[in-house]
Amino acid sequence: MNANPYKDGERLTKVETRLENIEVAVARMEEKMDKWHGNYISRVEMNELLRSRDERIERIEQERLANKQLYPGWINILIAFAALLVAWFHNK
Image (cartoon, rainbow, N blue to C red):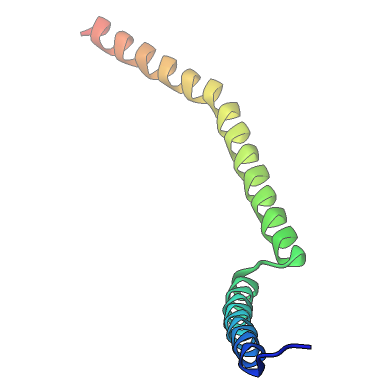
């Protein structure tokens, strides 16, 4: 048995102080977790974002391919225009 009852009270005060500090730390962690969960994107939302991004990329690739297919036509028009200019200046 302890001969000094004040020592038990002192130890109890230290334990209570540590417990209060732990409670404050846990409360701060809970607040941080709530903020983190508020900013968290769910898997369903992320899948939707990625799917729409993939669709946009596919559409851009198709447009780019369609534009590449127009190059020969534009080259033919330029050649015809150049031939027209040459013929016009040659006849003068």
